[in-house]
Amino acid sequence: MTQLNERREIVLEVSGLSVSYDRPILRDVNITIRDVVGRGQVVALLAPSGTGKTQLFNCIAGLQQPSSGLVRILAGKELVPVQAGMVGVVPQNSLLFEDRTVYANLMTAALLKGGSRKEARTRILELLELFGMNDAALQYPQQISGGQRQRASIIQQMLCNSRFLLMDEPFASLDLLKKIEVYHQIEKIALRDELNTIIVTTHDIESAVTIADTVLLLGHDHDAGGNIVPGARIQKEFDLIECGLAWHPEVATLPMFFDKVNEIKAWFPRL
Image (cartoon, rainbow, N blue to C red; front, side):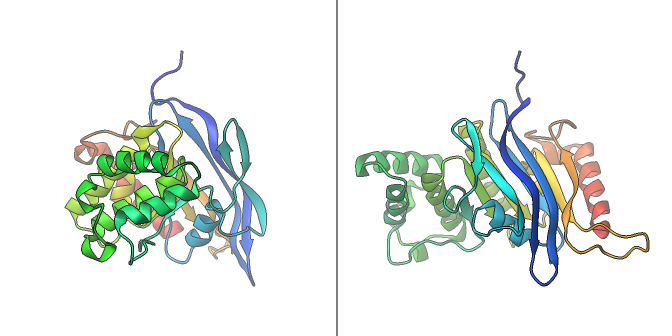
């Protein structure tokens, strides 16, 4: 019998991915993300600055071709090589057209996916309601708050790409209340469908453990003399479902939350 939160089929797979320019940036990166029964999966990718996180982000999004290796995502019932446009990307700075209302921005995105304007309107209104953005629909991007712009960007990408979403540093420069708002946004996406897959890149370890079911650490190997081996790869994976931390409503109050945060922090000098 299938159990709630059990991990099942692969929804995203990174195999032997390497990126090199004049030197190796990423080396033999392997990631497997599986469908979690009952809700979508949230993966947090943590890495020190200058480790190659941006290149990995772009490869997973299909925006950059790796020097070798492959990224595949679930399309229908098969894993297929990722291409640009198959994965939604929410950058730190929103990509909304400033001369169009929020609703017009969203309609532009929805029509790119195909279908009629009537169908697009239904989807837009549903997502505006879900994210509490009804009152901002007819406003222009410069008239709304930073948090509303981020929500509009999330809706924009969900209209174009229904399953996969990459969020780049969504907690940067936010106070605690704003972070909690973003946690709720991510949870809403995850709860819409168990095939929804959200990958968050962040430097914020506490936020990563709060919202993710899996935490990945990207960093470098070291040789026998302690020197860095060029080319970062996944050094450690933390399964937060397995240790009882995933999706707990009061997770930040649990002693084992602080234990896990400290464990991850202890890894950073090695990365």
